[in-house]
Image: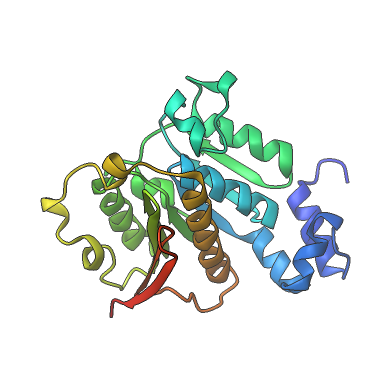
Length: 248
C-alpha cells in the first residue's frame, strides 16, 4: 500500500484477521488484538548500551510500534563484550544512530525516533511525552532518579533494570509508587557510578535483564498487570539464586 506506513498496514491486517508472517510465532502467546496493541504502543528506551541495545532488539522483533531511543554516547572498544549494537567498525559512532539503523534492518515497520542526547532535568519530560512506558537502561545512579522524576510528571510507568557483574535486578514503577528510593536510598547521597563500574558487565547478564524488562514493558503496553510493580526481582548467576522482594 503505497504511502501507508508499514505499522498501519500490519495493524489493518491483524484487525482483518490476517497475521503478518513475521509475527506468526507471537500468536502462540498473543492474540491478534494483542499484537495490534503492541504495534500501537509507544515505548521510550533510555540508555542504549548493553541493556538498552538488547531491549531495542527484542522490542523491534516483538513488534512494538513506536520506539523513542535516547542516548548521547558513542561506542568504545570496551563495549564490544556485551553491547549488541556495537561492532568493531562502528567504534566512535553514536549509539542512537546505530539503534535506528539496526531497527530499520530487522523491522522497518517500527517507527523510530532516535535522539543523540543524554537525558537531563531539562529535556527529560519532553523526551517521555506521549510514551506508554519507559525503560530505564542507564548505567549510572543519579540519572535513574532524573528519569523517574520525569516519568512521574509524565504519568508514565517505568521499568528499571540494572546489572553488575553476574547479578542484576529489575522492577516496575508507576507514578504513584515510592520507586527507586526503596532500592537505592536517598538520591542526594548516591555516587554517580553504580556497582557495574567496579564489578563490570557481562553479556549473559545484560541479555537476561533486558528480556525481563521487555516482558514487563509488553505487559504494560497490553494493559496487563505488571508482575514486578512494587517488587524487585534479583538474580545472581554466580550461584543461580533468584529472589523477588516485596517493596510495598
